[in-house]
Image 1 (cartoon, rainbow, N blue to C red):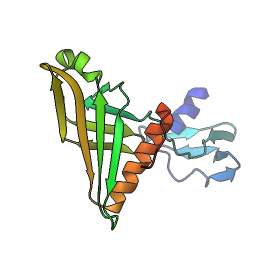
Image 2: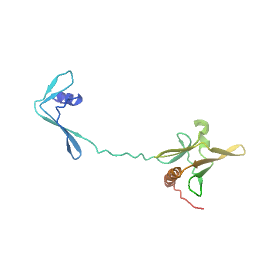
Image 3: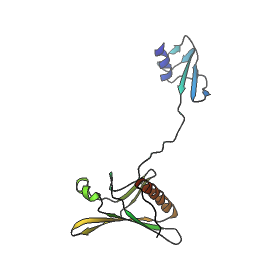
Image 4: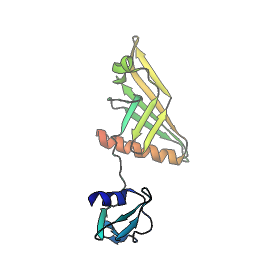
Length: 178
């Protein structure tokens, strides 16, 4: 009996099913005594009308909570907290963010993991990136990285500020207007 019932639900059963009835938190299907199946063209005979209940979870959006990070080599988070300077045009149409990292951790692992490929700011909305990255050397050794991110529209500016708010909250930073 259980095998026949599972076959009835596993195979494409024709319109002999009644329309679904909705109950809070579930959807139910009533199986009639006689159900026609496309499984080998045979009909399935059920001795008693069975009620099969299928519970549907309410559709929910899942928000991925990604810790905001900065990377120079994709997949490797930068541990050093940068000094960030912002400039914005008077009309608000564009702006520049300059990140300065003193003794960044990427210098410790770049030999093992590869070269610096860019500047990546990653959060739950996605990735902001720039290739305007330069290293400063003292006595032949790298000591500082400066990365520049250019915002060319108010939309870019707003997106950057959302990233910075998340990054600041995750790293205990605050905005100081000068």
